Amino acid sequence: MTIRTVATTPFAGQKPGTSGLRKKVKVFAQPHYLENFVQAIFDSIGAVAGKTLVVGGDGRYYNRTAIQTILKMAAASGFAAVMVGQGGILSTPAASCVIRKYRTFGGIILSASHNPGGPDEDFGIKYNIPAGGPAPEAITEAIFARSQEIGEYRILDAADVDLDTLGTQRLGAMTVEVFDPVADYAALMESLFDFAAIRALFAGGFRMTFDAMHAVTGPYAAAILEGRLGAPRGTVMNGVPREDFGAGHPDPNLVHAAELVAIMFGADAPDFGAASDGDGDRNMILGRNFYVTPSDSLAVLAANATVCPGYKAGLKGIARSMPTSAAADRVAAALGIEAYETPTGWKFFGTLLDAGLATLCGEESFGTGSDHVREKDGLWAVLMWLNVLAARRDSVAAIVTAHWRKFGRNVYSRHDYEGVDSEAANGLMAHLRGLSLTGRRLGAYEVVVNDDFAYTDPVDGSVSTRQGIRVVFGDGSRIVYRLSGTGTEGATLRVYIERYEPDAAKHHLDPQEALADLIAIARDVAEIERRTGRTEPTVIT
Ligand code: G1P
Ligand code: ZN
Image (tube, rainbow, N blue to C red; front, side, top):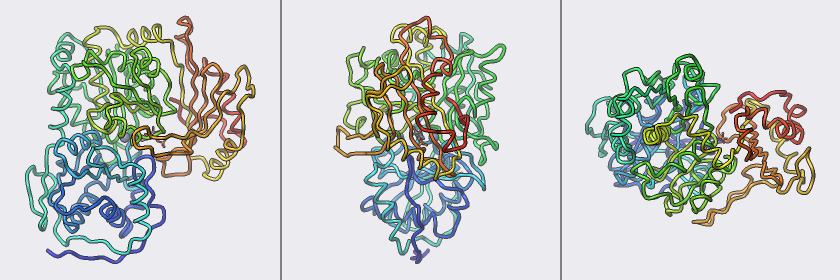
Protein backbone atom coordinates (compact mmCIF):
# COMPACT_ATOMS: atom_id res chain seq x y z
CA MET A 1 0.00 0.00 0.00
CA THR A 2 1.47 3.33 -1.00
CA ILE A 3 0.76 6.85 0.07
CA ARG A 4 -0.14 9.04 -2.86
CA THR A 5 0.45 12.77 -2.81
CA VAL A 6 -2.15 14.41 -5.01
CA ALA A 7 -1.76 17.90 -6.45
CA THR A 8 -4.84 20.07 -5.94
CA THR A 9 -6.02 23.65 -6.02
CA PRO A 10 -8.20 25.47 -3.47
CA PHE A 11 -11.98 25.65 -3.70
CA ALA A 12 -13.53 28.97 -2.78
CA GLY A 13 -16.08 28.88 0.00
CA GLN A 14 -14.75 26.08 2.20
CA LYS A 15 -15.63 28.23 5.18
CA PRO A 16 -17.24 26.39 8.08
CA GLY A 17 -20.55 27.95 9.15
CA THR A 18 -22.47 27.75 12.43
CA SER A 19 -21.64 24.05 12.62
CA GLY A 20 -19.02 22.84 10.16
CA LEU A 21 -18.89 22.89 6.38
CA ARG A 22 -22.27 22.16 4.80
CA LYS A 23 -22.84 21.90 1.07
CA LYS A 24 -24.87 19.90 -1.39
CA VAL A 25 -23.66 16.33 -1.92
CA LYS A 26 -22.89 17.29 -5.52
CA VAL A 27 -20.44 19.91 -4.27
CA PHE A 28 -18.73 17.48 -1.88
CA ALA A 29 -18.58 14.80 -4.59
CA GLN A 30 -16.47 16.94 -6.96
CA PRO A 31 -12.95 15.53 -7.33
CA HIS A 32 -10.67 16.76 -4.50
CA TYR A 33 -13.38 18.79 -2.70
CA LEU A 34 -13.73 16.60 0.40
CA GLU A 35 -10.05 15.67 0.29
CA ASN A 36 -8.95 19.32 0.32
CA PHE A 37 -11.08 20.06 3.38
CA VAL A 38 -9.98 16.95 5.27
CA GLN A 39 -6.32 17.75 4.56
CA ALA A 40 -6.97 21.32 5.71
CA ILE A 41 -8.29 19.90 8.99
CA PHE A 42 -5.31 17.59 9.45
CA ASP A 43 -2.92 20.46 8.67
CA SER A 44 -4.60 22.80 11.19
CA ILE A 45 -4.98 20.77 14.38
CA GLY A 46 -1.39 20.16 15.37
CA ALA A 47 0.76 17.05 15.02
CA VAL A 48 -1.48 14.08 14.27
CA ALA A 49 1.19 11.37 14.12
CA GLY A 50 0.46 8.59 16.57
CA LYS A 51 -2.92 10.06 17.55
CA THR A 52 -6.39 8.47 17.59
CA LEU A 53 -9.32 10.02 15.73
CA VAL A 54 -13.05 9.25 16.04
CA VAL A 55 -15.08 9.18 12.81
CA GLY A 56 -18.78 8.68 12.18
CA GLY A 57 -21.88 10.33 10.88
CA ASP A 58 -25.63 10.47 10.76
CA GLY A 59 -25.92 7.82 8.05
CA ARG A 60 -27.04 10.18 5.31
CA TYR A 61 -26.23 9.68 1.64
CA TYR A 62 -22.45 9.97 1.02
CA ASN A 63 -21.61 9.09 4.66
CA ARG A 64 -19.91 5.81 3.80
CA THR A 65 -18.05 7.22 0.79
CA ALA A 66 -16.72 10.13 2.83
CA ILE A 67 -15.65 7.85 5.68
CA GLN A 68 -13.60 5.66 3.33
CA THR A 69 -11.78 8.74 2.05
CA ILE A 70 -11.17 10.09 5.55
CA LEU A 71 -9.81 6.74 6.76
CA LYS A 72 -7.34 6.53 3.88
CA MET A 73 -6.27 10.14 4.40
CA ALA A 74 -5.90 9.63 8.17
CA ALA A 75 -3.66 6.62 7.47
CA ALA A 76 -1.59 8.70 5.04
CA SER A 77 -1.25 11.51 7.59
CA GLY A 78 0.14 9.22 10.28
CA PHE A 79 -2.75 8.76 12.69
CA ALA A 80 -2.15 5.63 14.77
CA ALA A 81 -5.82 4.69 14.96
CA VAL A 82 -9.31 5.67 13.92
CA MET A 83 -12.37 4.60 15.86
CA VAL A 84 -15.33 4.44 13.51
CA GLY A 85 -18.95 3.74 14.44
CA GLN A 86 -20.33 0.50 13.01
CA GLY A 87 -21.96 1.11 9.65
CA GLY A 88 -20.43 4.59 9.76
CA ILE A 89 -23.12 5.53 12.28
CA LEU A 90 -22.41 7.86 15.18
CA SER A 91 -24.78 10.47 16.50
CA THR A 92 -23.20 13.84 17.19
CA PRO A 93 -23.59 13.58 21.00
CA ALA A 94 -22.34 9.97 20.95
CA ALA A 95 -19.30 11.14 18.99
CA SER A 96 -18.64 13.75 21.67
CA CYS A 97 -19.05 11.08 24.35
CA VAL A 98 -16.58 8.70 22.70
CA ILE A 99 -14.01 11.42 21.91
CA ARG A 100 -13.98 12.31 25.61
CA LYS A 101 -14.19 8.84 27.09
CA TYR A 102 -11.23 7.45 25.11
CA ARG A 103 -9.23 10.68 25.30
CA THR A 104 -8.77 10.82 21.55
CA PHE A 105 -7.40 13.62 19.42
CA GLY A 106 -10.92 14.70 18.56
CA GLY A 107 -13.14 13.45 15.81
CA ILE A 108 -14.67 14.12 12.43
CA ILE A 109 -18.46 14.13 12.33
CA LEU A 110 -20.26 13.77 9.03
CA SER A 111 -23.64 15.39 9.11
CA ALA A 112 -25.73 18.24 7.83
CA SER A 113 -27.82 17.93 10.98
CA HIS A 114 -31.50 18.51 10.27
CA ASN A 115 -31.08 19.28 6.56
CA PRO A 116 -32.52 16.69 4.15
CA GLY A 117 -30.25 13.92 2.81
CA GLY A 118 -29.88 12.25 -0.58
CA PRO A 119 -27.92 12.68 -3.83
CA ASP A 120 -29.47 16.12 -4.43
CA GLU A 121 -29.50 17.19 -0.80
CA ASP A 122 -27.02 18.20 1.85
CA PHE A 123 -23.86 16.80 3.37
CA GLY A 124 -21.56 18.19 6.01
CA ILE A 125 -18.32 17.68 7.85
CA LYS A 126 -16.90 19.14 11.03
CA TYR A 127 -13.98 18.61 13.35
CA ASN A 128 -14.52 18.28 17.09
CA ILE A 129 -11.65 18.95 19.47
CA PRO A 130 -10.32 16.52 22.13
CA ALA A 131 -12.65 18.06 24.74
CA GLY A 132 -15.46 16.68 22.56
CA GLY A 133 -16.96 19.93 21.32
CA PRO A 134 -17.10 21.63 17.95
CA ALA A 135 -13.86 23.34 17.02
CA PRO A 136 -13.82 26.94 18.24
CA GLU A 137 -13.61 29.77 15.73
CA ALA A 138 -9.81 30.06 15.93
CA ILE A 139 -9.54 26.50 14.60
CA THR A 140 -12.32 26.74 12.01
CA GLU A 141 -10.71 29.94 10.73
CA ALA A 142 -7.34 28.18 10.50
CA ILE A 143 -8.95 25.29 8.60
CA PHE A 144 -10.56 27.74 6.21
CA ALA A 145 -7.32 29.64 5.71
CA ARG A 146 -5.46 26.39 5.02
CA SER A 147 -8.16 25.29 2.55
CA GLN A 148 -7.57 28.48 0.59
CA GLU A 149 -3.87 27.85 0.03
CA ILE A 150 -3.77 24.08 -0.23
CA GLY A 151 -1.63 22.60 -2.99
CA GLU A 152 -1.67 18.86 -2.25
CA TYR A 153 -3.17 16.15 -0.08
CA ARG A 154 -2.06 12.68 0.93
CA ILE A 155 -4.11 9.52 0.65
CA LEU A 156 -3.34 5.85 1.04
CA ASP A 157 -3.96 3.65 -1.98
CA ALA A 158 -5.92 0.86 -0.37
CA ALA A 159 -9.10 -1.17 -0.64
CA ASP A 160 -12.16 0.06 1.27
CA VAL A 161 -12.45 -0.82 4.96
CA ASP A 162 -15.30 -3.09 6.11
CA LEU A 163 -17.39 -0.67 8.20
CA ASP A 164 -19.97 -3.22 9.26
CA THR A 165 -17.99 -5.82 11.18
CA LEU A 166 -17.12 -4.95 14.76
CA GLY A 167 -13.46 -5.25 15.61
CA THR A 168 -10.02 -4.15 14.56
CA GLN A 169 -8.56 -3.97 11.05
CA ARG A 170 -5.34 -2.56 9.60
CA LEU A 171 -5.16 0.16 7.04
CA GLY A 172 -1.52 0.57 6.14
CA ALA A 173 0.23 1.32 9.42
CA MET A 174 -3.00 2.53 11.02
CA THR A 175 -5.55 0.63 13.09
CA VAL A 176 -9.25 0.97 12.32
CA GLU A 177 -11.52 -0.02 15.17
CA VAL A 178 -15.16 -0.48 14.19
CA PHE A 179 -17.12 -0.08 17.44
CA ASP A 180 -20.72 -0.24 18.65
CA PRO A 181 -21.93 3.38 18.34
CA VAL A 182 -24.62 2.95 21.02
CA ALA A 183 -22.91 1.18 23.95
CA ASP A 184 -20.77 3.97 25.44
CA TYR A 185 -23.50 6.53 25.00
CA ALA A 186 -26.16 4.33 26.61
CA ALA A 187 -23.85 3.68 29.58
CA LEU A 188 -23.34 7.43 30.02
CA MET A 189 -27.11 8.02 30.01
CA GLU A 190 -27.59 5.29 32.59
CA SER A 191 -25.03 7.01 34.82
CA LEU A 192 -26.95 10.32 34.70
CA PHE A 193 -30.58 9.31 35.04
CA ASP A 194 -32.68 7.18 37.35
CA PHE A 195 -33.34 4.31 34.96
CA ALA A 196 -35.15 2.31 37.68
CA ALA A 197 -37.66 5.12 38.20
CA ILE A 198 -38.20 5.51 34.46
CA ARG A 199 -38.61 1.74 34.09
CA ALA A 200 -41.25 1.86 36.82
CA LEU A 201 -43.00 4.71 35.01
CA PHE A 202 -43.28 2.66 31.81
CA ALA A 203 -44.26 -0.45 33.76
CA GLY A 204 -47.16 1.55 35.20
CA GLY A 205 -48.62 2.10 31.72
CA PHE A 206 -47.05 5.46 30.85
CA ARG A 207 -47.08 5.79 27.07
CA MET A 208 -44.60 7.55 24.87
CA THR A 209 -43.86 7.97 21.16
CA PHE A 210 -40.35 8.82 20.03
CA ASP A 211 -39.94 9.85 16.40
CA ALA A 212 -36.42 9.17 15.15
CA MET A 213 -37.41 10.66 11.78
CA HIS A 214 -35.57 7.85 9.88
CA ALA A 215 -32.35 9.38 11.17
CA VAL A 216 -29.48 8.48 13.47
CA THR A 217 -31.24 8.28 16.85
CA GLY A 218 -33.28 5.21 15.87
CA PRO A 219 -30.76 2.63 17.13
CA TYR A 220 -29.99 4.71 20.23
CA ALA A 221 -33.64 5.24 21.16
CA ALA A 222 -34.56 1.62 20.53
CA ALA A 223 -31.68 0.33 22.67
CA ILE A 224 -32.31 2.75 25.53
CA LEU A 225 -36.08 3.29 25.59
CA GLU A 226 -37.32 -0.10 24.43
CA GLY A 227 -34.25 -2.03 25.58
CA ARG A 228 -32.96 -0.76 28.90
CA LEU A 229 -36.08 1.13 30.02
CA GLY A 230 -38.68 -1.45 29.01
CA ALA A 231 -40.92 0.84 26.95
CA PRO A 232 -43.17 -1.25 24.70
CA ARG A 233 -41.91 -2.14 21.24
CA GLY A 234 -43.24 0.45 18.81
CA THR A 235 -42.50 3.33 21.20
CA VAL A 236 -39.81 4.34 18.70
CA MET A 237 -41.20 5.21 15.28
CA ASN A 238 -39.23 5.73 12.05
CA GLY A 239 -36.37 4.05 13.89
CA VAL A 240 -34.20 2.78 11.03
CA PRO A 241 -31.66 5.34 9.74
CA ARG A 242 -32.08 5.85 6.01
CA GLU A 243 -29.72 7.62 3.62
CA ASP A 244 -32.50 9.99 2.56
CA PHE A 245 -34.28 10.09 5.95
CA GLY A 246 -37.32 8.55 4.27
CA ALA A 247 -37.36 11.55 1.89
CA GLY A 248 -38.24 13.66 4.93
CA HIS A 249 -36.76 16.72 6.56
CA PRO A 250 -35.30 15.41 9.83
CA ASP A 251 -35.88 18.53 11.87
CA PRO A 252 -37.85 18.00 15.07
CA ASN A 253 -40.23 20.93 15.01
CA LEU A 254 -43.97 21.42 14.64
CA VAL A 255 -43.76 21.62 10.86
CA HIS A 256 -41.35 18.83 9.94
CA ALA A 257 -42.26 16.34 12.67
CA ALA A 258 -45.88 16.50 11.49
CA GLU A 259 -46.46 12.76 11.93
CA LEU A 260 -45.57 12.91 15.62
CA VAL A 261 -47.46 16.15 16.14
CA ALA A 262 -50.62 14.55 14.69
CA ILE A 263 -50.27 11.66 17.14
CA MET A 264 -49.67 13.92 20.15
CA PHE A 265 -52.57 16.22 19.32
CA GLY A 266 -54.88 13.41 18.18
CA ALA A 267 -57.39 11.24 20.00
CA ASP A 268 -55.89 8.87 22.56
CA ALA A 269 -52.53 10.62 22.44
CA PRO A 270 -49.69 9.12 24.50
CA ASP A 271 -48.47 10.87 27.66
CA PHE A 272 -45.21 12.02 26.15
CA GLY A 273 -43.83 12.61 22.68
CA ALA A 274 -40.36 13.49 21.47
CA ALA A 275 -38.35 13.66 18.30
CA SER A 276 -34.74 14.12 17.35
CA ASP A 277 -33.00 15.36 14.23
CA GLY A 278 -30.71 13.94 11.53
CA ASP A 279 -27.62 13.64 13.73
CA GLY A 280 -29.31 13.27 17.11
CA ASP A 281 -28.40 16.53 18.78
CA ARG A 282 -31.77 18.30 18.61
CA ASN A 283 -34.95 17.45 20.46
CA MET A 284 -38.61 18.41 20.49
CA ILE A 285 -40.67 17.74 23.60
CA LEU A 286 -44.44 17.29 23.50
CA GLY A 287 -47.02 16.37 26.09
CA ARG A 288 -50.50 15.12 25.32
CA ASN A 289 -51.96 18.05 23.37
CA PHE A 290 -49.10 20.22 24.51
CA TYR A 291 -45.98 21.68 22.89
CA VAL A 292 -43.01 22.66 25.03
CA THR A 293 -40.86 25.37 23.46
CA PRO A 294 -37.14 24.58 23.63
CA SER A 295 -36.61 27.72 25.71
CA ASP A 296 -39.19 26.55 28.25
CA SER A 297 -37.79 23.04 28.15
CA LEU A 298 -34.37 24.33 29.23
CA ALA A 299 -35.95 26.32 32.05
CA VAL A 300 -38.11 23.43 33.28
CA LEU A 301 -35.21 20.96 33.17
CA ALA A 302 -33.03 23.44 35.06
CA ALA A 303 -35.68 23.95 37.72
CA ASN A 304 -36.11 20.19 38.19
CA ALA A 305 -32.57 18.98 37.56
CA THR A 306 -31.83 17.77 41.06
CA VAL A 307 -34.33 14.88 40.76
CA CYS A 308 -31.83 13.31 38.34
CA PRO A 309 -28.92 11.43 39.96
CA GLY A 310 -26.36 13.04 37.64
CA TYR A 311 -27.46 16.54 38.67
CA LYS A 312 -28.30 15.88 42.32
CA ALA A 313 -25.60 18.25 43.53
CA GLY A 314 -27.25 21.16 41.71
CA LEU A 315 -26.25 23.28 38.75
CA LYS A 316 -23.16 25.46 38.49
CA GLY A 317 -24.74 27.83 36.01
CA ILE A 318 -27.09 27.93 33.04
CA ALA A 319 -26.10 29.12 29.58
CA ARG A 320 -28.38 29.97 26.69
CA SER A 321 -27.82 31.42 23.26
CA MET A 322 -28.77 35.07 22.88
CA PRO A 323 -31.94 34.49 20.81
CA THR A 324 -33.19 31.85 23.28
CA SER A 325 -35.86 33.18 25.63
CA ALA A 326 -34.85 34.43 29.05
CA ALA A 327 -36.99 31.81 30.85
CA ALA A 328 -33.86 29.98 32.02
CA ASP A 329 -32.41 33.23 33.41
CA ARG A 330 -35.35 33.40 35.83
CA VAL A 331 -34.60 29.91 37.06
CA ALA A 332 -30.93 30.77 37.43
CA ALA A 333 -31.84 33.84 39.45
CA ALA A 334 -34.11 31.79 41.71
CA LEU A 335 -31.37 29.20 42.20
CA GLY A 336 -28.79 31.90 42.86
CA ILE A 337 -26.54 30.73 40.02
CA GLU A 338 -25.05 32.51 37.03
CA ALA A 339 -26.92 32.83 33.72
CA TYR A 340 -24.79 33.17 30.57
CA GLU A 341 -25.87 34.58 27.21
CA THR A 342 -23.77 33.41 24.27
CA PRO A 343 -23.94 33.81 20.49
CA THR A 344 -25.86 31.26 18.45
CA GLY A 345 -24.11 27.93 18.03
CA TRP A 346 -23.13 25.22 20.49
CA LYS A 347 -19.43 25.92 20.13
CA PHE A 348 -19.79 28.96 22.40
CA PHE A 349 -20.83 26.79 25.36
CA GLY A 350 -17.62 24.74 25.31
CA THR A 351 -15.42 27.09 27.32
CA LEU A 352 -18.13 27.60 29.97
CA LEU A 353 -18.61 23.86 30.37
CA ASP A 354 -14.86 23.14 30.41
CA ALA A 355 -14.33 25.82 33.05
CA GLY A 356 -17.12 24.44 35.23
CA LEU A 357 -19.11 27.66 35.00
CA ALA A 358 -22.26 26.12 33.50
CA THR A 359 -23.94 22.75 33.82
CA LEU A 360 -26.98 23.08 31.53
CA CYS A 361 -27.08 24.81 28.16
CA GLY A 362 -29.77 25.41 25.62
CA GLU A 363 -30.77 27.03 22.39
CA GLU A 364 -34.21 27.93 21.13
CA SER A 365 -33.44 25.86 18.03
CA PHE A 366 -34.36 22.61 19.78
CA GLY A 367 -30.94 22.22 21.36
CA THR A 368 -30.51 21.24 25.00
CA GLY A 369 -27.55 19.69 26.73
CA SER A 370 -25.21 19.63 29.69
CA ASP A 371 -21.61 19.16 30.72
CA HIS A 372 -21.86 15.38 30.17
CA VAL A 373 -20.63 15.93 26.58
CA ARG A 374 -19.73 18.99 24.53
CA GLU A 375 -22.58 18.86 22.03
CA LYS A 376 -26.27 19.37 22.44
CA ASP A 377 -27.95 16.04 22.98
CA GLY A 378 -31.46 15.14 21.83
CA LEU A 379 -31.94 11.83 23.58
CA TRP A 380 -30.35 13.17 26.76
CA ALA A 381 -33.06 15.86 26.90
CA VAL A 382 -35.75 13.23 26.37
CA LEU A 383 -34.33 11.07 29.16
CA MET A 384 -34.08 14.05 31.50
CA TRP A 385 -37.73 14.81 30.84
CA LEU A 386 -38.60 11.17 31.50
CA ASN A 387 -36.68 11.32 34.78
CA VAL A 388 -38.57 14.47 35.78
CA LEU A 389 -41.89 12.91 34.77
CA ALA A 390 -41.05 9.75 36.73
CA ALA A 391 -40.18 11.79 39.81
CA ARG A 392 -43.09 14.21 39.67
CA ARG A 393 -45.77 11.86 38.35
CA ASP A 394 -47.51 14.78 36.71
CA SER A 395 -48.34 15.50 33.07
CA VAL A 396 -46.05 17.52 30.82
CA ALA A 397 -48.71 20.24 30.55
CA ALA A 398 -49.16 20.42 34.33
CA ILE A 399 -45.41 20.66 34.93
CA VAL A 400 -44.94 23.46 32.39
CA THR A 401 -47.98 25.50 33.42
CA ALA A 402 -46.98 25.21 37.08
CA HIS A 403 -43.54 26.45 36.05
CA TRP A 404 -45.12 29.49 34.38
CA ARG A 405 -47.22 30.22 37.46
CA LYS A 406 -44.10 30.25 39.55
CA PHE A 407 -41.70 32.10 37.24
CA GLY A 408 -44.00 33.87 34.77
CA ARG A 409 -44.09 32.96 31.10
CA ASN A 410 -41.58 34.13 28.52
CA VAL A 411 -43.94 34.01 25.55
CA TYR A 412 -41.78 33.21 22.58
CA SER A 413 -41.80 32.49 18.88
CA ARG A 414 -39.33 32.27 16.01
CA HIS A 415 -40.30 33.17 12.46
CA ASP A 416 -38.09 31.82 9.68
CA TYR A 417 -38.11 33.13 6.14
CA GLU A 418 -36.31 30.39 4.23
CA GLY A 419 -34.79 30.51 0.77
CA VAL A 420 -34.79 34.31 0.60
CA ASP A 421 -32.69 35.93 -2.12
CA SER A 422 -29.23 36.42 -0.55
CA GLU A 423 -28.83 39.97 -1.75
CA ALA A 424 -32.23 40.95 -0.37
CA ALA A 425 -31.41 39.30 2.96
CA ASN A 426 -28.06 41.05 3.20
CA GLY A 427 -29.71 44.32 2.29
CA LEU A 428 -32.27 43.82 5.05
CA MET A 429 -29.56 43.18 7.62
CA ALA A 430 -27.59 46.22 6.41
CA HIS A 431 -30.76 48.28 6.76
CA LEU A 432 -31.21 47.04 10.34
CA ARG A 433 -27.57 47.74 11.17
CA GLY A 434 -28.04 51.28 9.92
CA LEU A 435 -30.99 52.00 12.21
CA SER A 436 -30.55 53.56 15.56
CA LEU A 437 -33.68 52.86 17.51
CA THR A 438 -32.56 53.32 21.11
CA GLY A 439 -34.88 55.74 22.89
CA ARG A 440 -37.54 55.55 20.17
CA ARG A 441 -41.11 54.35 20.64
CA LEU A 442 -42.39 51.51 18.49
CA GLY A 443 -46.11 50.98 19.07
CA ALA A 444 -46.62 50.60 22.80
CA TYR A 445 -42.95 49.89 23.43
CA GLU A 446 -39.89 51.96 24.09
CA VAL A 447 -36.57 50.73 22.71
CA VAL A 448 -33.90 50.59 25.40
CA VAL A 449 -31.21 48.59 23.59
CA ASN A 450 -30.60 48.37 19.85
CA ASP A 451 -27.32 46.80 18.83
CA ASP A 452 -25.59 44.04 16.93
CA PHE A 453 -24.86 41.48 19.62
CA ALA A 454 -21.19 41.06 20.46
CA TYR A 455 -19.80 38.56 22.93
CA THR A 456 -16.61 38.35 24.90
CA ASP A 457 -15.99 34.83 26.11
CA PRO A 458 -15.55 35.10 29.91
CA VAL A 459 -13.07 32.22 29.91
CA ASP A 460 -10.70 32.83 27.02
CA GLY A 461 -11.51 36.45 26.24
CA SER A 462 -12.22 35.79 22.57
CA VAL A 463 -14.57 38.28 20.96
CA SER A 464 -17.36 37.45 18.47
CA THR A 465 -19.13 40.32 16.77
CA ARG A 466 -22.15 40.72 14.47
CA GLN A 467 -24.13 37.96 16.17
CA GLY A 468 -27.62 39.35 15.60
CA ILE A 469 -29.53 42.62 15.70
CA ARG A 470 -31.30 43.16 19.01
CA VAL A 471 -34.22 45.45 19.63
CA VAL A 472 -34.89 45.29 23.36
CA PHE A 473 -37.82 47.13 24.90
CA GLY A 474 -38.34 48.68 28.32
CA ASP A 475 -40.43 45.79 29.61
CA GLY A 476 -37.82 43.21 28.58
CA SER A 477 -39.62 42.25 25.38
CA ARG A 478 -37.29 41.67 22.45
CA ILE A 479 -37.04 41.27 18.74
CA VAL A 480 -33.87 39.68 17.36
CA TYR A 481 -32.86 39.32 13.72
CA ARG A 482 -30.13 37.18 12.27
CA LEU A 483 -29.29 35.28 9.12
CA SER A 484 -28.83 31.55 9.34
CA GLY A 485 -25.28 30.25 9.15
CA THR A 486 -26.26 26.66 8.35
CA GLY A 487 -28.29 26.91 5.15
CA THR A 488 -27.04 25.81 1.75
CA GLU A 489 -29.52 27.62 -0.50
CA GLY A 490 -30.16 31.34 -0.60
CA ALA A 491 -30.51 32.95 2.81
CA THR A 492 -32.73 32.26 5.79
CA LEU A 493 -33.84 35.20 7.87
CA ARG A 494 -34.66 34.31 11.46
CA VAL A 495 -36.78 36.67 13.54
CA TYR A 496 -37.08 35.89 17.24
CA ILE A 497 -39.87 37.50 19.25
CA GLU A 498 -40.27 37.41 23.02
CA ARG A 499 -42.43 39.03 25.69
CA TYR A 500 -42.58 38.34 29.41
CA GLU A 501 -46.05 37.63 30.78
CA PRO A 502 -46.32 37.53 34.57
CA ASP A 503 -50.14 37.24 34.58
CA ALA A 504 -51.15 33.57 34.89
CA ALA A 505 -54.60 34.38 33.53
CA LYS A 506 -52.93 35.03 30.17
CA HIS A 507 -50.55 32.08 30.12
CA HIS A 508 -52.86 29.90 28.06
CA LEU A 509 -52.89 32.31 25.10
CA ASP A 510 -51.48 31.22 21.75
CA PRO A 511 -48.05 32.88 21.41
CA GLN A 512 -48.89 34.13 17.89
CA GLU A 513 -51.81 36.08 19.39
CA ALA A 514 -50.01 37.14 22.52
CA LEU A 515 -47.09 38.42 20.42
CA ALA A 516 -49.16 39.89 17.58
CA ASP A 517 -48.18 43.52 18.17
CA LEU A 518 -44.48 42.69 18.42
CA ILE A 519 -44.68 40.51 15.31
CA ALA A 520 -46.15 43.43 13.38
CA ILE A 521 -43.41 45.75 14.68
CA ALA A 522 -40.76 43.20 13.70
CA ARG A 523 -42.02 43.08 10.12
CA ASP A 524 -42.28 46.86 9.84
CA VAL A 525 -38.90 47.68 11.27
CA ALA A 526 -37.07 45.25 8.98
CA GLU A 527 -39.27 46.03 5.95
CA ILE A 528 -39.54 42.29 5.45
CA GLU A 529 -42.26 42.31 2.83
CA ARG A 530 -40.82 45.12 0.76
CA ARG A 531 -37.31 43.71 0.82
CA THR A 532 -37.96 39.97 0.49
CA GLY A 533 -41.37 39.83 -1.13
CA ARG A 534 -42.51 37.55 1.71
CA THR A 535 -45.79 38.20 3.45
CA GLU A 536 -45.54 35.19 5.77
CA PRO A 537 -42.73 33.21 7.38
CA THR A 538 -41.96 29.74 5.99
CA VAL A 539 -41.68 28.09 9.40
CA ILE A 540 -42.99 29.27 12.75
CA THR A 541 -41.74 27.59 15.89
C1 G1P B 1 -29.08 26.85 13.61
C2 G1P B 1 -29.65 27.27 14.94
C3 G1P B 1 -28.56 27.29 15.98
C4 G1P B 1 -27.87 25.94 16.04
C5 G1P B 1 -27.39 25.55 14.65
C6 G1P B 1 -26.81 24.14 14.62
O1 G1P B 1 -28.11 27.78 13.20
O2 G1P B 1 -30.28 28.51 14.87
O3 G1P B 1 -29.12 27.61 17.23
O4 G1P B 1 -26.79 25.97 16.92
O5 G1P B 1 -28.47 25.60 13.73
O6 G1P B 1 -27.77 23.19 14.97
P1 G1P B 1 -28.44 28.94 12.13
O7 G1P B 1 -28.98 28.25 10.91
O8 G1P B 1 -29.49 29.79 12.77
O9 G1P B 1 -27.13 29.64 11.94
ZN1 ZN C 1 -28.34 18.37 14.49
